[in-house]
Image (cartoon, rainbow, N blue to C red; front, side):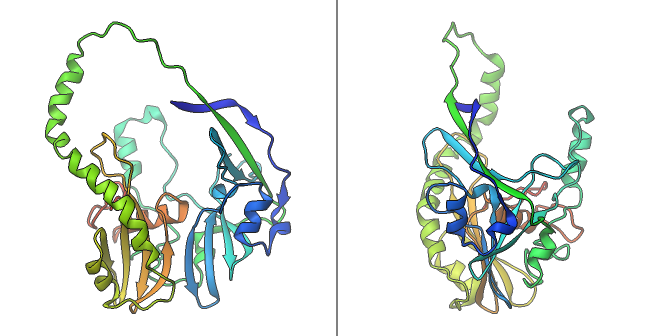
Amino acid sequence: MLAAAAAQAEPTPPARLSELIGATPAQLQARLGGDGAPAAGLTALTPDGELQLIELDTFGASQTAGEVCYADQPPPPGAPPSRTVMMVFRQGRLTGAVVPGPVRGPFPSPQAGFKAMDAYMRAPLSNGLVARAGELPLESGLPDLAERLGEPLAGDAEIVRKCQTLVPVARPAPGRRHFDDAGFFQGLALLPMAVTLPGLNAERSRARSEGPRTLAELTLGEALEGGAAGFAARHRGVFAEQGAGSYAVLVINLGAEPSNNVSRMNDAAFAGVRDGRVEWIAPSMRQAPGNRVGLGLCEGADGRPTRARRGCTAYGFFSP
């Protein structure tokens, strides 16, 4: 078992955002001192050319075992200490960054109780990928997407890479085991669900193998034979959520690691299809743009989370 250690590696020298303008994703990754290729974000074809949104935290990700790295920038006085920042690339070059607003309101205090938490989770959402409540993500188009997401990051903001080392946590020494009657009866209650676990794990593994190959078949601007519905019909683990007119969102199941958890928490990739052509691609729900796509799929006509669409819970959590 691993946990974050108190020791933290020295950050790379900071650079002002204005100094990074014009960099490619690979150049920004190198400037932040990271290893490997930067994580993919959301890529779209707009009237101004190709637009790419990549979460700042994914730059500088280290491949060193036992180390977790992320990039951050000092927030202004009075702002929350941790904020999502989207780096904006147009035609492959950095043009700026935006700070998306929170999708939910202020988090209730732990003392507020279940009713307050339930009201918080069911309250209207604020998601820049959904222009009007009830629409699918990006259904209204892409021209002002970066502006809708949030406030632009100031040019004098400093970007810096930070790292934390992970160290093993000592497990408690084994002692005498006593009969756990509460755990026993909980196990009996979960037994019917556990029967489904082997099949669920098989599906998770299959999707982890097949999903990335299916995603690799999609190309921005490509005309899909039979449109979104035709593509979904030809590929296992894919479904199309139909919007207004000729717009649809393809959902590709990317699976998950096999586990003892019977809850569905698979990763997903998304693609927007308009008039039969691929307009945008979000390759992972676990990155910030993809997470907002998943949340947007679960937004109802009243702006609140709903389970009316496939894969959604009443609180807005999504899994293919």
